[in-house]
Image 1 (cartoon, helix red, strand yellow):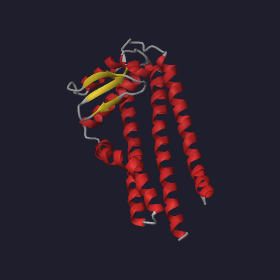
Image 2 (cartoon, rainbow, N blue to C red):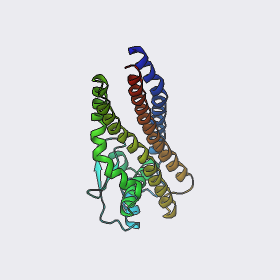
Image 3 (cartoon, one colour):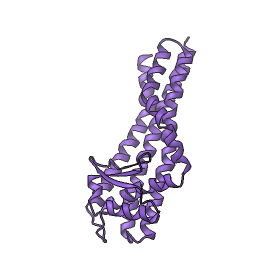
Image 4 (cartoon, one colour):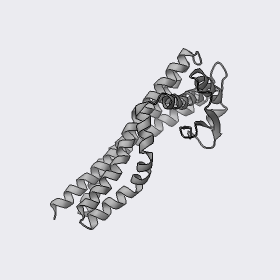
Length: 231
């Protein structure tokens, strides 16, 4: 049974793991390539973000520099767009794409974009469920307490749902970024292709994250029903 459970886990998780590794490789490759290509207008990531925000009447959104690589994010609670060091002050195609993408989240927030609102509501439950769910589930299995195991499944299931909801949020932000970069004349021709390469690769990482979460949830469900049959 020990080997069977772990064999089942690897059978389910390996495809998702390989997809995740491929997605990470793609995003790192695209980001590295287009980080080395200067944008023709010479605008830094911070300047691109500011232009996109101002064009959408979001002058109240501040832009800050943060440490890390690809640590860029928009904080809807404080209305702050935080850009990593390699994006904030760099006039590259990759920086323009990432900055515009994060500004896209600010636009979503302003327009009360449904999936973003849902994701924000889910954050507290996901922060708890991602680590507590598996503990409660395994405890329920070991103690043969089905109700406890089911609670654990639902808690972890919220993590999977969060990962699924994240996909349209990120895809929409990327679409908004491409549209505004093109319509505002910030990027031209092949530069837009570079932006698309970076943002599309980043989107794949969210798809991979959802697949990994769902594969783990499926493993837990199979464990649960397998345990019940053996009693």
